[in-house]
Image 1 (tube, rainbow, N blue to C red):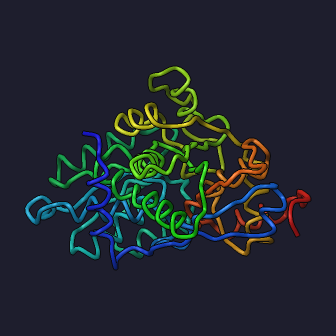
Image 2: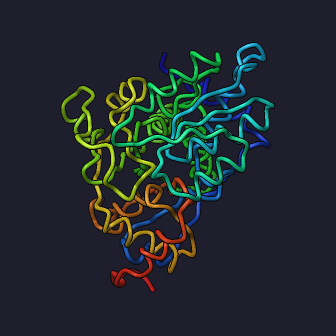
Length: 330
């Protein structure tokens, strides 16, 4: 069932005092580079280091004690994993997380530290959904899907509520919002909130090259699949196909899709670190990469860019910083 603005507002009430209300940041250097008026929504500063905590907590806290007594189960490369593990720990439930063996060590360690019982699998040769289904059949746990879940989408949509409220409070007439996209739970929640609030802003999804299932799906008018399950540094954005709930929303309300290369992502990460003084993981940097690469033309426009996560392994950050400077910023 498609969530509504009422669902998103209910999620905001559940998250009040639990999640971090991240603010919109501006940067004269970023405005100068893009010749636009840019605001950054820094979910890198969210609890567990990404926006995923919002949806995870909203979904887990919506369970009745009877539903949650056998624990919760999730599949994730890391950010949803940490969000579910943290939410379950706060609420007193057990969590089992199915994670790819090649997930960043930082995310695996973070999930374990937050109380998650981790089951590793081979992303290229094993089916994580089948593994999760077997766990649920054995334990009676409840699946918290990373994106195809009404309550998860509503929780992620609280980002859109905050963007619209802060833009209104500061007189920033936002025209476009760029959101990193995998299965589409985040972008569809933001899309719903921004549209329902009547901001007039258009929401664009941004994906890594080679994993542009959402862009191809929007163009075709029906969900499409990625040909590969791995092969990009953007580990957080490798869902094989859009979620049914999110696709209905984005297909109806979305402005379109943008694609960026791994090289452009590394340059965006380096720019964020050197110039903006922010740590952003690859998947969290794709919207900024679309802006800096010119794949989205921000000249003269008011744009909000979402930095969706900051859980990056030191080695990956070193790779980004070792790349030759792009000439952007200082």
